[in-house]
Length: 626
Image 1: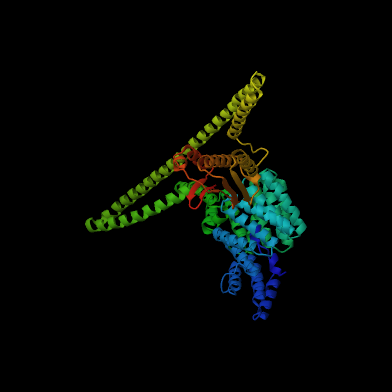
Image 2: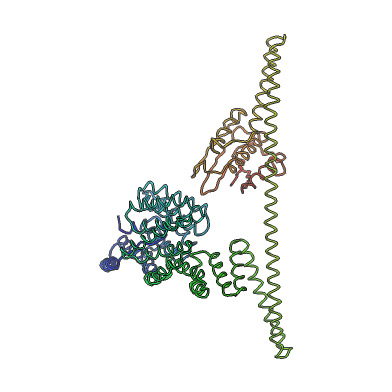
């Protein structure tokens, strides 16, 4: 196996493995001797050089990546060597803060690797974990969890301690980000265990950083700082300034939480020295600058804190735009510049509501552009008519009025948007109440059928058996009443809400369709496929899906004159699709969207964010997507 196969996914931690100058010189010498070699060998060398420069100079990483990719006339996602180069390119985009482009590249690589006949579980696990990290950076927790689980599956198949340590680290980091520190500590301990078994310094240090940070958040400050001090000593022993710096930032933060100002000063000095030894713009460097800015704010050095933030705008991509604006606001407030403080706080508030921010930002940009045009025209007109000494006064009045108009329009648009959101929430609440009422009514009718009608019919059967009529008449009467009783019981069972306490959606639907086939004589052929565990589907979703399927199959059997219905349920990439296909008559009078059945189905789907579509061709197809 080529050496670079063990260096491919630095984002997983997210840190970079490092290389010595001797290793780089050796690779360059090998490149010089291999100019006329085959593409595979050249790819290997360029890939290794790109990875080695990740901790030294990102421009050099980009240079050697392009050299390697230029060996291919066209993109070739069926070639493993090409995938390794693209994976390092995705790491590069992550390092410069372009998370969306990084996500796009990782996803292409992951899907292409899965399609290959020869599996590389170690590679697949690392790319899946990288996707989990990037989705977490983008704030998409569901996707992040999905790919972390994929990474864990592949990691267990590869049996690689380094990969398993990385996976548990990222799961722990996700819990940490959601303030679930006990669960973060549990996963961090697993990460430390596997990191020590792997013997890889970078894994050992970052696993302990996560453990230390979690301890600090639950008040175990002494334990936290001790772990980080050992990390720094270990990193410096291995001549790794980047790894030492990666522990200094959380150490300063722990002392800050502990309210130990004097203890911070020596590590600020050490951090400044190490800062000069790591690549400029590296995430670890940006993290240190963000921590340093926060400490200066804490010390009351508001101007120095702002100089760091404004002079390093990439810090926002490291700590998030919301935190970046809040820290700026605190600094401006400390400097008595309340206008700027308010502006940054407003930015932070708007960034928390990305949809609103995008809409208002677009509207404000358009209005501002129009305002500028009008202001210039008015200015020219006044210069032609008015005296020179009046120009400044009138221009200021127009500017103030324009700003007021823009702010008023923005406020109106914002209130309209909030009103639309509230209206949608009210509609959804009404639908939920309607569904709850429908279910309560079903439950009441089921109880009355079972406890009343069924028991009364059973009593009638016993009474007939005691009468003096002939045996043949008795048997006929008993059979008719018994059939009525069984049908009433079946109806009561259908009305009762399904229970998912001891079963899942797949089992409940399979059982229900089996009973329908037995009772109605219509063959309901049900099959299901899913890339997740059925038990992971929330009960409220399973419940509504079950009721929708129940309503649809009942309508089809009653109104469409069928002898067979094919039902297929598929779950892929967190999307559930249910298809009903059959040959029969489509009775629009009983199945159009004004019927209570389909209206109820649409209301149920609205609650769980689903849709329904009906296609009539050679056969009738009904598709539900959730």
